Length: 132
Image (spheres, rainbow, N blue to C red):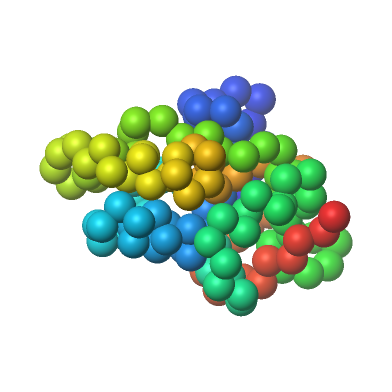
């Protein structure tokens, strides 16, 4: 992760979503889950499979790895979704049932936004720890 003064993003510089959340939205929408619809920077595999668990992270800090050098992000807000999630990443075909599922299941939020508080390197399979 790097800290930017400016960038191109929706609400924050970092977007995080759990795979369980994506799977649940796909199930509710009757579609195969595709994380690309949600355009996250970071996809998390949870130890405890609970869709929309990210909601509980707001106000906390996620550290990627352990120790003083571990990169961290402050979880600042829920990721309120727009109609972009309806577009198939390969064909751009609309599927309005995706956003409808997000609205019904979690009041239009899926994933969270955050801000980098300590820069560092992320790696696939890295342990992520939530600090409140």
